[in-house]
Each structure stands twice: as C-alpha cells, then as structure tokens.
Amino acid sequence: MKQKLTSTKKYNFGIARKIVSNMTSQSWEEIPHVCVTYEPEVTDFLEVVKEINKDATPETKLTINTIIMRIIIEGLKACPAMNAHLEFNRKLVRGTYTQYKEIHVSMPMVLNNGEMMTVNLHDMQDKTISQIRDTVIDTKRRADNSDMNEVMFEVSLNDTLKGLTRGKILQTVYRLYGSKMPGKHQVKILSGEKKKKYYSIPEKDRLTKHDIEQGTITISNLGSIYREWKGACTILEIVPPQVVAIGVGASQLVPFAEEDGSVRTGYKIPFTIAFDHRALDMSDIVPFMKKLDSIFENPEMIKNWV
Image 1 (tube, rainbow, N blue to C red):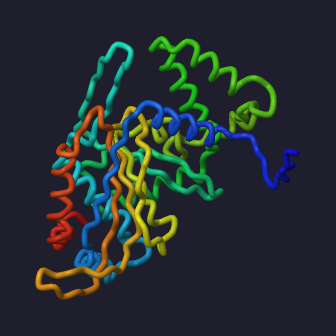
Image 2: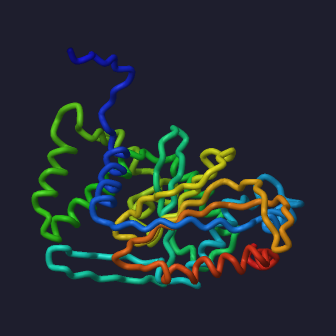
C-alpha cells in the first residue's frame, strides 16, 4: 500500500520563481558547463581592507564584497573572453560568440521581503570601488520602491516577444497562456489606480526592465549568505546567453604549507568559475586567474582604485 504523505507547505510559483526556474532549466538543458575552483590566499588583502576602512564611517565603508567585485572586473579586463554572449543553433550547428567592452554585472540581491532578485549593474568597467559601492546602495534603494512582480513581468514579456521575433512561436504561446490565463497560476500585476500610482514614481527611484535584463556576466556573492560557510561552491549555472558565472565564497582561516615544510595559518577565499565549453576552454580563463593572483599577492594596488 502506498504511504500517504502529509504536506507541510505547498504554493504555486510566483513570477520570480517562474523566471528563475525557466532560466536555470534552459541553462542546464543547453549549456555544457565546466566548473573550476580558484582559492587564493587573501591574508594580506584583508589587512589592506582594514587599513582602507580605518577611519571610515558606516556610510563610507568599503565592504569586502564591493572590493572583490572591483578585483573581478580587473580580471575580466585582463581576460575579456569571459565577458561575452553566445548564440548557438544546435540543429544548424551555427554559433556566434560576441565579446563586449562594457562590463554589465548581473548580481543576485536579497530584497527586503527575503526574495532573491538578479539585478544588472551597468558599465562597471571604469568605476572606482566607491562608485561600485554607491551603485549597489542606490540599486537597493530603488528596489525598495519597486513592485517586483511588475518589473519582472515587463522583463518576462519583453523576453517572450523577443522569442517571437526569433521564430519561437510555440514557446511564446505557452508563456502567454501560462502567465495570463485566469487561475491559480496567473501572474498578478497591478491595474487601475494602483498601476497608475506606481508608474508615477520616477524611473530614477524604482527599478525597470533595464535594471533586470541580462548583463554580460554573473557574479554571485555566495559567501554573504552564510559567512560561517567552510566549503566552496562546486557547480554554478550559467545564465544564457552569458558564457561565464562566478561565485565568491566566504573567507576562511586555513593552514598553508611553506616550501620548507613549515605550516602557518592564513585566510583564503574560494571562487567558483563556471564557463560554457562551447565558447571557452580552460586555457581561455587562465589570464583571469593570473590577474587575480597578481592582485592578491600585491594588494597595496587596491588603494589606487578607491
């Protein structure tokens, strides 16, 4: 006899979960992932961060996360092959790889309601660490003023219509049916006076589809979710059409063996680098790791980027 299970929680996907589910499903269905871990020592780097923040106020403090993002951006400048999009038609065996000068960072962000949303931080290639900090703070401010269902529906509808122009007629019909047909799975968006009031908020004070659309690369600060985490992410999804995703773990106190056989303690930060094997090989991302090595070995240079 089949045992009856007692349900403790059940809910239908909202638009945020639908978008995440669709993107991650497409990622694993289409992209041949290669994931590598990179674990540099950051003992001296953390001391430099303390020095930079010695006289900082809560408003001017530069977080490790913000500085790490700036370091990753330097790595991407040294390895532009990672900052790219790929379009591939498997049936026709045709692919187009497009590398970009601008670095638009897709960054998952935890909202005030506890939900996760990936935002697009535009034109990060020339920003100082302070400017990156201010951009992140302003994005969170605008997110607090935003109806995320409304923003994500704009993005989803735009993506669906793009699919229609590419000949994905059946996909378009299914998506419109799944989101707009009345019932428990219908996407709830604003209407009437509520919609009018919401869209009266200036765009500079709320998020729009421009802030949610795909960037050129994804950087996830996994370590901020659980700072006591003692491991490393071993696999990470790449969001098409991007070709690389980077996950940053929490700093960890670990033993280091010296060449003379002695052992000392220091800190490391584990990075996960996932790349699309259709576009890149392992050798293509080596310049990125070498650039980060040079920075962590000589962290005083960070002071020039503040």
